[in-house]
Image (tube, rainbow, N blue to C red):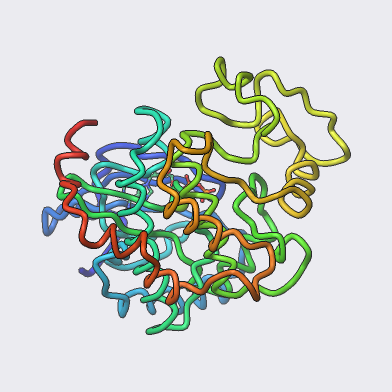
Length: 309
Ligand code: ATP
Ligand code: MG
């Protein structure tokens, strides 16, 4: 596609993130429906051009588990990225609307995300860097794909400066300043999968699940009053510092209550959530785990599942 801003007709706002917004658009010359991500940067024009060059790598990413890329361009001081539109949206919205996701479906999500992470790393040496439920999308054909991976070093640099918001899927070693490896993505995947299965972000107040009854979205808010130990407030609840302390010092989240979930699923989560990245499993090994074997052969109709919302 030869993409120009004036050829894109806005159909719907899909969401706002920390860095900008995403819209459903029609590319009028071709009739193709796309998702347009608009990222505002204050970067110099030379840096913006470099970001665009770096984004071109996405043209070479072809996997059933990765969002397709149609192209990117500059408009005003925005970087505009056109990608595949996924009509059922992101998994965070799906569980917030419909409640916890069935563990067999979470298995399919694990399989898709691991395939995507492994493809990016083995074929392109790209580490995703931002695995979380809002970056795992699905469509009514029953496909599950990951998006928003860190292909452009310059883009990562220029957004790092303006970065505000939750960094809650960050692994203990990242919080402690170690460099990023593909195993940091595995941690983020483990946290995301536990979140989908429980229907809430798993770091909240493990002592009293009853507190969650009036906080169905499970975000650090509501009853838990922040002690605000010097950090920014996280969703009006925990401070970022409290959350970081929990990630680094407390046992990793688990599927609860005990017995409600298959033991093999818990074992898989545990292997994703070893605090020590040396001990934590790599994506390739996790793809051979029994729970993933099961997910591969499981005949769940994801298309039928997506038709329920
Ligand atoms: P963050 O800014 O912290 O990464 P985010 O992932 O929610 O959070 P965006 O990447 O800007 O922020 O996306 C905003 C929302 O738009 C997402 O939550 C998702 O629901 C929706 N969205 C993003 N990409 C697509 C897409 N390709 N197809 C359909 N919906 C999408
Ligand atoms: Mg995103």
